Length: 428
Ligand SMILES: [Zn+2]
Ligand SMILES: [Zn+2]
Ligand SMILES: [Zn+2]
Image (cartoon, rainbow, N blue to C red; front, top):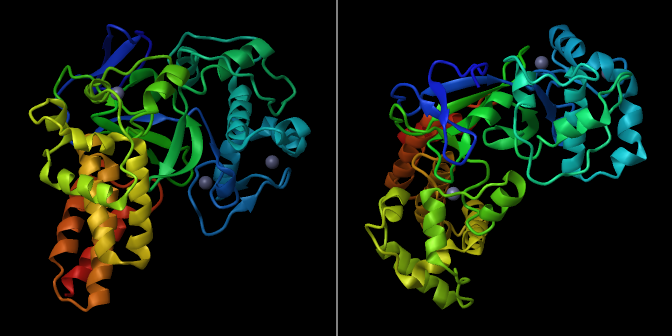
């Protein structure tokens, strides 16, 4: 434990159930960078290949192809040589034979991503030995706990001196419960291994921190862990491993993939609800639930979970996953093509549910507020009204929340959209 470099803001402390926990060393202000974490290996989603640089993952105006395999793309010679030295030198010659092989082709899409990531990781491992000492990213990865279920190791791109099958099994057993989906503007573009991120942070469905990804030309991607709210010294810093909105299925994911039972206040609350009924099937029933929800508005999930307000029985069905997916679908259809009144109405209900199930300042709430602001603007334009109070209110709230996590991934994104929308609203 002493060999793990945790940075200035975080220290590891004992945890009653988990291996350790990351706690704040000093007060951390909302929006502050808690730690910057290097990647060990990353791969792009197939849809991003040829669009992003395979080394730094930025989207340059033009890319140069590896002349050896014609399957890897780079910004320039600096990215190419960085990737060549670390990974590609040992893969280039074998890569196309590997990806066209029947054993690779037989894999499902997510298994292909794992197989490619494992192939890259395998290049970094000195053959025949697995070292767990030291503080390098590889050593930290080696020190991670394996997943609770053994999954067959996928075939890798052999590189002349591949690690032994036992070593590959050892590496791969740490994938499912430790690796991360990297995102830009909250859309996944690749998968990555960020060992220190896995080693330090436990899960909570109401996390006080979130991970974002920094991509910049000529540098390998980094993970930044940012405080979503003010964190006191000694307080545990947690990330969420799955979308907290998966209220019914998340506990099963924790148990099967991660091998733990979440005991956060949200999970204790959901457990206490007992059986969660499905949504009424008739439209009147749905309208009744929505009206009731309007009357019952706790300020935040915090208030709900501290039980200062008892949840009325008729509202239990809003905690069924199918409720959110049903109204999200209605919202996304109507927010683009109208009717905008309906979109704004349904969007308000979604906002209420988000405030119940997500922690304070969770980016998803900010993104939804931005969609509400855009819908409000569409309504103003379509009706020829001059009243922009509603979109203005939403865009202001969206900015407050999304500024906390800040810019991530590529240039532009939600913060830029907010600026553009505010400029439009100011011309009114
Ligand atoms: Zn690059
Ligand atoms: Zn190549
Ligand atoms: Zn939980």
